[in-house]
Amino acid sequence: MSRDEMRAGDSDRQAIADKLKTALDEGRLDLHEYDERLQRTYGAKTFGELDSLVTDLPGTVPAQQSRVQPYQPPAAPSPAPGAGNVPQPGGPPFLASYGGVVLVCFVIWGVSCIASGDFIYPWPLWMLIPLVFGVLGRWGKRDR
Image 1 (tube, rainbow, N blue to C red):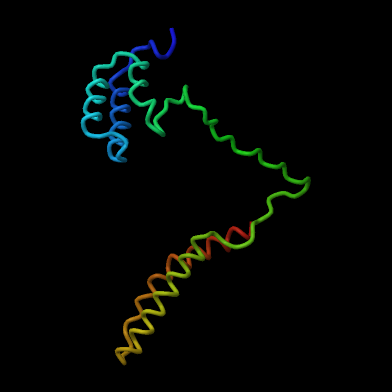
Image 2: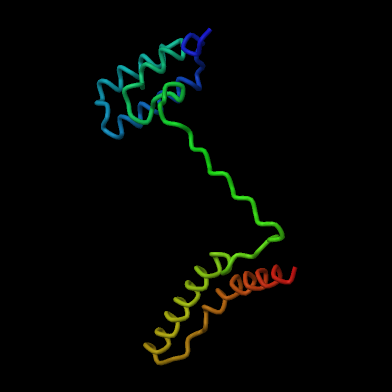
């Protein structure tokens, strides 16, 4: 028995209904055709009947009929003998990005102090806490 002749379940019908809704939202189906196909979806008994409802829609072709090959990640090159675990330059990306956020906050605080003429509570100091923990965590990993 081929897949097209196998009986479809409620979750299979719902998946096709979702694909039809996406096609309607994208303007690929008008409301009348969407309604027609939706009625046929909930009346379908087999996978073949369901697949025929979406084969003319881009991005909704069943995987069995697709001509696109699945992505195969390239094989990782083997490390050179004795290379071991070489640390990559730079730190975790969050340290650089979060450090920039902290810097911007300190600039805003400084401009606020200058504009008001008063020393305002240094609220950006609280933002240093996660940054310090990140730096200490990174520093602790280098000792190993």
